Image (cartoon, rainbow, N blue to C red; front, side):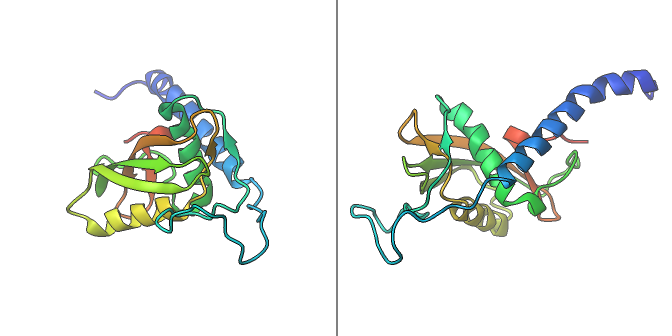
Length: 174
């Protein structure tokens, strides 16, 4: 039985609001100014391991998050801002190509120090590689000022088109 138009509009309201909030977050993140180097070219701060990714010399916006769950919202907004053309717009289809749960360690300078799959989409190794590349090239992330460093977890919802949403900012599924 098909719901009446008034019943459908009642169920759409929260999703429309969530979609609007995700779009505003992505727009705000995309409007941030480009990072500016604080060191002369070729200069390197000591003590940084070559295995950490993301230039430590760039000015990075701070995060006021007090918990990893709160930081996850800042990280998702940061990723959406850098990948606006790759974000799936609207509700995702019922059948997704891949779903993965990734844990990311961010140091006090916003660099990615570790990525760890809690649930990798093993049937799609190209998606695993692309998600890891996307996460690493997005550094530096917002600085976790209140926590010093942070480990956050997010779920990647990957469409067969190659576009994605993060569970933190998802617009839901059809």
